[in-house]
Length: 114
Image 1 (tube, helix red, strand yellow):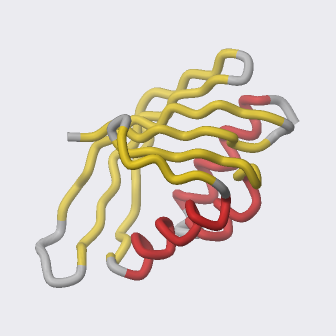
Image 2 (cartoon, one colour; image 1 turned 45 degrees about the horizontal axis):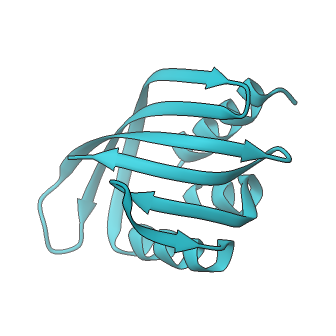
């Protein structure tokens, strides 16, 4: 698969609501993830715990994708996520996910949101 195909597979998985399955399939064992350039999580196990906490503490209503840029092993995806956190009001979070790919999997992902 091309880098663009891989990025699209991640997008399709998330849009289908299979956030954890998509993570398991498309993220590298040595992945590093962060929020707004801080709070780095290192390794697939640590990153999956964070993803599980998100999935288990929200009702996910869906998502939309804006611009997608793929350049070699780098990609950027503009997201609009619609969810309701437990005990809170429904919200739409806009974010950009910057990804670095290695061996056909995401090795680094940084989320930027307000």
